Length: 174
View 1 (cartoon, rainbow, N blue to C red):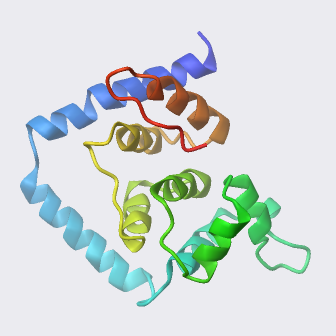
View 2 (view 1 turned 135 degrees about the vertical axis):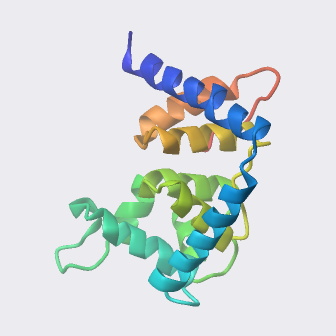
């Protein structure tokens, strides 16, 4: 069995178990604690008034990927947005806070930054957006986050495979 098939099976397992169980048995008390904990974490660890651009840069630096650092030690933004498959104009708009990025751009950032579920929600909220269970593409992205599949080629193939679903087709983010 190929690597692609294995990843698709893992995504399928997450889609068939985790999200279906959560819909049938919503855990309201756990949700209250989840949001309280997230709020406390946000207040404790993140500067107030941090822009979307500053948040992204903080996560890029956390990756400690030498590919995203210039010889002078500064962040190589062009290296990152090229890796994330985000065009220069979109990155410039994020940097200068000109427009809110499209959802596809935010999803690319989630994958490129290798964010966990809480961080992905934080990024989406900062851009006045969200990941929803009603969107098939969002459910697949959440499953990919859960199985920690962040290789862009693999994500592309999985999204391409699921995006062809006749009942719920969607465009690939790449």
